[in-house]
Length: 127
Image 1: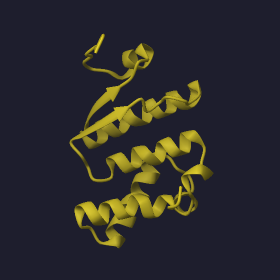
Image 2 (image 1 turned 90 degrees about the vertical axis):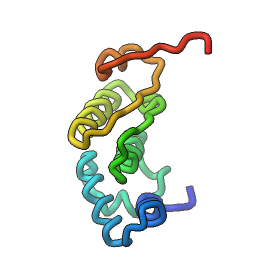
Image 3 (image 1 turned 180 degrees about the vertical axis):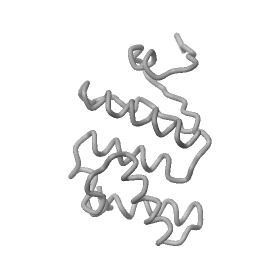
């Protein structure tokens, strides 16, 4: 972890989408508020290892939605989270998905999670 969260998130929008630094910074702060991060300024100045697992997951969710993609591939987004934080993160993903109109391909082995959030399910077995 050699880069602070703010530069990682902002640089992506500047380089990939060609946004100004100010526009990218405004968008990132808006998204951090949407994912219920209480002190965005502190988080933006932090390194990833300085945050809890739930906070890191919220930052990643904000980054995923930053450029308003039509599809997000979420590969095991609740792995290694305790049950309480997992529930919060799932609720947040579903809420943002509805608000932004983004399709989410949710990859997981946890059928309990699948039952809570899925509209359609495909099962891969033996490759």
